[in-house]
Image (cartoon, rainbow, N blue to C red):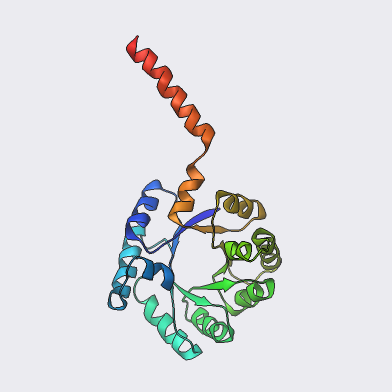
Length: 222
């Protein structure tokens, strides 16, 4: 499984990149607003992210356009920021048409806010490079997000779309989300920094370290 980090915070991206586990970055308007981002600085900020991770690492930048024509225009504009920009579009009729055109132009699209297998299949058929089901938001309304993810993964993987299509497990809240997504065969988990750090934590690891340190202290003190 690949790990993407779901943030617009440059310090978090630098930290994740330093671990050697960062395969991509996903951002959205909410994440950019969370760091106090300004409209005038948006393109420069996305460029900084792309520079931190390197041109081989995909960085999703979301369009806020409403019409197909505007999505295409904004997607083309965003793609000029850096060669590793992926245009992020929410699933809808307008974005399917925009995705189809951007795909023909060689601009990758991450179709987001996907909540059903038919939506995922339509996104893949239209030309989306990535498809992002939101696991945690299913859980928020009392549904099984992992079960929904499994259905989408199976449906998409059943077919050859003539190109690579990867499923990004989004709205990840817990290490168990990551584990279950990996067992299902989802290609990617995009994880907030807090959840990524939780993936490192285990009480038995902490206990083991404490014992090693205590035993080594005995050796040092003779």
